[in-house]
Length: 466
Ligand SMILES: [Zn+2]
Image (cartoon, rainbow, N blue to C red; front, side):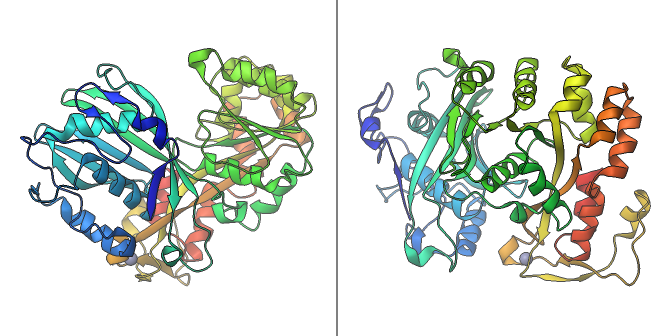
C-alpha cells in the first residue's frame, strides 16, 4: 500500500525553521542525533497480514530500541507506517504524546486506547513539525492549540484487498495539537474513508427499527435528529441515512465541521469560522441553493437550532445530530435553547438515539456463563434456556474477545399524540415515560436482541446503557 499526499508538490516548497527543507518524503535528521526506533523491524508492510502488524506493533512497546544503521528511518517514514497500520487495524484515533523520556504512540481501537510504539524523545520536534506541515498547521506556533486536516490518497494493491470488499480511495484525518508540560501532543482522528459509507442495515438498525427510519427518510420535510454521547456512532448513522436518499432525484446539501465522509452526488460544504463561514451563515446561504434535503453536522448553538427548525417547517428534510444521551433529553435541550414548543412539535419527524457496543470476536467466540454479579447489580434476569456467547480471546482480537463495533438504537417517530404532549408543556418525566413506551425498541431491548443473536455480550449492553 502506498500513501501519497494529494498536495505533495506544494508541501515540498514549505520550509520549517529548525530542520531545513521538509519534502513530502523526507525530513533530514541531523547526524549527531541518535536514531529513533521504528515501530516495526520490517519495511515490507504491504505483504504483512493485519494480525502480524498488530503483533509487531504491540511488541514494539516493550523497549525503546535505537536503530543506528538504517538511514531510511525518518519521522516521515515512521508516521507513514503509523498511518498505514491505523488504516489496516481500523483505528479511530492516533495519539502522539510526549512523555519525559519518550514519545508515546497510542491507537484507539474499538473505543480502547493501547500504546503501540515508543519513539526517542529527541525526535519530538521533528515528528510534531512533520504532522503540522502535512496538516496545514503553523509549525512555529508551539504554545497554542491548533486544528488542521490531512487527506491521504491510498493505493492498495489488489492482493491486499479482501475478496468482495471495495478498498477506500483516500483517508481523512482531523488533526489537533495541544501544548502539554512535556511539549506538544497531537491527536489524529481518522475521519473514515472516501467511498466507504455504510448502509443503515450495516450500522446495526434492527429489522424493526430499519423500516421506521427508512419511512422517516421518505418524508419531504421535518427534522430527523440523531442523538448519543460523543463517539457513539451518530455521525456514521447520519451518513448512512443520507446515503439512503436518492441523490439523483433530490438536491442534497450538507454543512459540516469537518466533512468526514465524501458522498457522491451530494454538495458538501465545510464551515470555516476563521473567515466567518459559520453554521448560521452557511445555512442562510443554503436556502438560495434550492435544497430538498439538508444535512447539518451537529446542532451546537441556538442559532443553528433555530434555522434548522425553520428549514424543516418550510418544506425541507433536515438531518442532524445533537450531543445528548436520550430522546427526552434532546427535546428538553431544544426548549433550553429557547425554541418555541409549537415549533419543536411541528418540526420534528423523528429521533434516533444510539450507543455503540463491541462485537464478539468471530475467531474465538464460544458459549459463556451469564455474568451473575453484574446482572444482580443491574437487576437483569436472563432466561436460562437462552445461550450467551463471549470471545475467549485470540491473536486476531488481541485477546480482548471483541472485534469491531455495532450500534444499538432506540427510534421514535414523532406522531400527532407526541406533538400534543410537547405542546402541553410536558415535564421531563412525562416525556421519558412516553418515549420509553413508544420507541420501536429501547436501547436495552435492541441490545439484548443482539446478545440473543450472539453478536455482542450482556456486559457490553449493560456498559453502554447505564
Ligand atoms: Zn478473538
